[in-house]
Image (cartoon, rainbow, N blue to C red; front, side, top):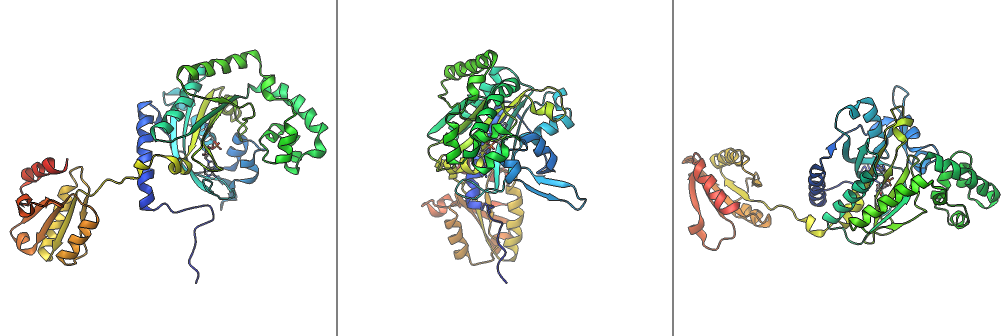
Length: 424
Ligand code: HAM
């Protein structure tokens, strides 16, 4: 029988790789805590309707990329392709805005049926941050600077921030009339996908990946030129504040993002260290989403960072694993019991211990201890174990026995003193 394989576009993350993941996650969580942003965990599976209404019917994510199926009760379910729609739903359902839990983060797997390549998977992970109920331009700047600073603190190099304003609903309505006219005039030159979108969701044609359509769009009216004075003023304030914070940005008036819910600020951060899938972070304001989903008029802004891409470009020093502090070598029936007892005792300290459970010879166990690069060893033979004793020493100390002490299993104070002196 053939070995069972994992699904295309999904990968196993093995212990060696996870050292970097865990270090990255630790720093991210530290930064989020410092910014008093609190975690939210929403289900990985939701009603399909949530994403159709939240992300938008004409988007690639909804049209082509969702993992959608009927459950046994014949309800259409979807594995979440992103987190914003779920957070908006959770905010409405749980009345979160009534409390103070409105700066939220989440981290976890997302699913999109895309063609896998380096930095693009079908199951991938995101860190998302959503500020719900925040309207001031300061919150846009805080969100952008938070994303920027997290990436910097993780040692990501060659960062580029691009920003744009998509205006509000009225700006986009005004634009749509002119844009539609342009599309109709050029209908025969558009690709089939774009033709299908023209009356469903014309603005999405702006994200087309079709080179010929992109060329035609060069001459199309620009959304940016239809922004009201108020929208332009808002955008200027944000740019000025980014300059004050010395966060370098480029304006990209073509940046529309692939999801329907955005208004006003849209931004992306790419890194020159990534290949073709260079966007490590995307975000923006979504002032209409919660209302469209049946909540009140609640403005909001957020971003998501793709963790696979981030891990590829985060500093190499984050790959370092904490070494083993104590390796417990033990041989013989009594020694094994004492070793088990001792390893439980050591779990009260902030130490990494490795209990050898192989029953192999002392020399084999020492070899393994050396391979683990342990800082110290505890050695227990049956003779010591019968006396309820063990010895402990630094592993690579050339002083040999001088550095070794023998302790009674009951001698907690001396053990702690030795650990503090040698391992902390
Ligand atoms: P997004 O731009 O669709 O935005 O995704 C954010 C990031 O997730 C991307 O920049 C990329 O790093 C990563 N990503 C997306 N698809 C894949 C994939 N197939 N494989 C690997 N990484 C991927 C959102 O999802 C919005 N919810 C962001 C947001 C939050 N806007 C407001 N709040």
